[in-house]
Image 1 (cartoon, rainbow, N blue to C red):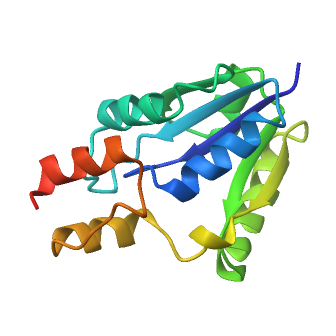
Image 2 (image 1 turned 90 degrees about the horizontal axis):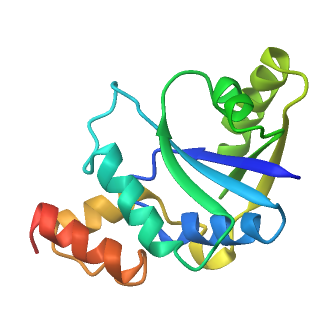
Length: 159
């Protein structure tokens, strides 16, 4: 069985994230969306809220599971029986950082392979930070996030 992990903060999950999750689900038998619990960041949504939102928007994907994790990504992947990490790339600037992380993960666990999936061109400009900023100024985010996520963001920050 080919098992992959898609790690991230997903605060909030965007249509770009969802595109990567769907495409990965079509390539692997099982996909774990791992939401990193990062105490250094000040997220809009709690980890539990992010888990709930991603579960709602991936409900039609029977091979996708969502949960939070702490610690090293390679340890989390091992705990799930995953040999593959999947990362979405929007631009060359993403590649530089993600390439460094992939090499570090490979050094920590030589059995782990990292796959990069380029974003759909329609989402190449999109990030969770942009979504939050646009929403904070009352701008429409309906093209950026699924409806369930849009409602949750508006409930959190107003609008």
